[in-house]
Length: 414
Image (cartoon, rainbow, N blue to C red; front, side, top):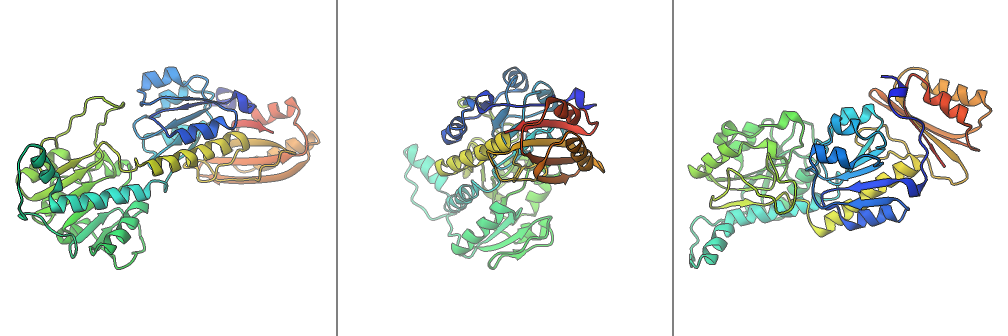
């Protein structure tokens, strides 16, 4: 694939930038982008591949959450696409290799809803331990069941956290404040917070935990992470929470272990297959079970979190579209040059090969272009350079840069 097969030199005024936001992204994000003069369209639901292909033509910035999948086929239909904002934590719904190869930057919100997920986990741990879900259902059905049987305090119990990242580690701190003992397991070497103790294996964690809470990412290796074998190792009458990824837990096996009484209760917020739109039908192996809390992927869905996420990801999209900034990008080399209205800026995405920067600067020098500021970063097979020049660049210079065999994408910003 040559540079001619990819993208021409691009220059957009703010008023030309088209934005498509899906999955009911918070209005603050849309308004933040509109304030820059962008054309913004917002839709409530997710789009399937065919519908997205039809909708994405001419779109420069795309905002999604967890239910819209960005495939190579979608990207092939979106030659104008500059960046994708995942208004959530995970990016496993995006083909990152394909976006990177096309010079499409991807941004997410790795921290904005951490507290919301933690608070839901704490609420569910207490609710399951006190069997509040069952008590409430009985009361709605006219049954007065005033009994302490099966109802427990969480103080002094052991919480096992699988995945000690941003959410898992904050859950650890809050749980300790409630009097829970905390153990955790992570494939990476993570520093224990407070009095938490690291387990060397998942098996060790399962054998010692009264409550197990999963906080893993969506990498393919986590599919089927927690199945019948792992559930059998859990302590009798323990509790299981999954607020991370639907693919991580075998729901058929979980139902069997709950029906047998080995697992006393569960709370599940994520599912292998989830409806795309509000009001769509939902089915799960876990429906109809007592002391099982099912929620519709709302771990991070508080008004505070969604507002923060809307503003945060929208600011990253705006920075990239208008100034070329890639701070906290999931897939692109990170660069930030201060925005300066007196300068003209070239944003050059290229294949990471020796001598590209020298070639770029040589071309600019040959045409008498004075460089005032420049920054280069690489990430894997991709390089990215921002160059500020004193005056506008002649079309023949841009054509020469775009024609370089290493060029993936070239934009002129001013």
